[in-house]
Length: 189
Image (tube, rainbow, N blue to C red):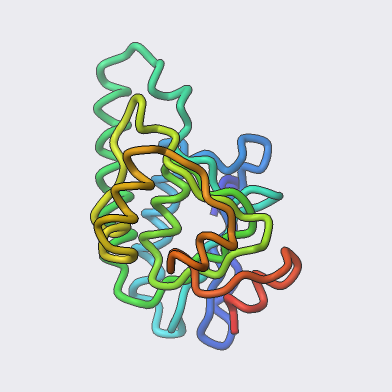
């Protein structure tokens, strides 16, 4: 793995994939999305793996897509950006083993989508969730709708309002809320 992504394991059937761009709030650049897709492709056929945990380095789970890349005025780069995005979403959604998001801090925009695309979400009490990109981009609506139902999904997607970990638990977005130093251990468990 390159420096953008760290893989630990599998150990006892569990691997932990850590988004490693804490200086950029673990924003999903094209390079990071491609590394995630490549890692998931390899892990999908690993006979030792039974479950995958995804988390973020530092105090943020993931701040979403790297918005600076959308400003690049180069047609080839933009084609690569969208191809990377399509592959990344498909790879995460179609991963054949259980995925647990260990949401160690804010999960915003595409980071909220990444958490929702996981099968189970364990959140730190410092986590928050929001879709602030409603003013300029698309939201991955289907998995959120499947998780919490249409009314809640529309509220969160259309308003972009931020919910804290306690409200996320009450709405069924997450399965458990624990102190920050316990989120990864509970997810591994």
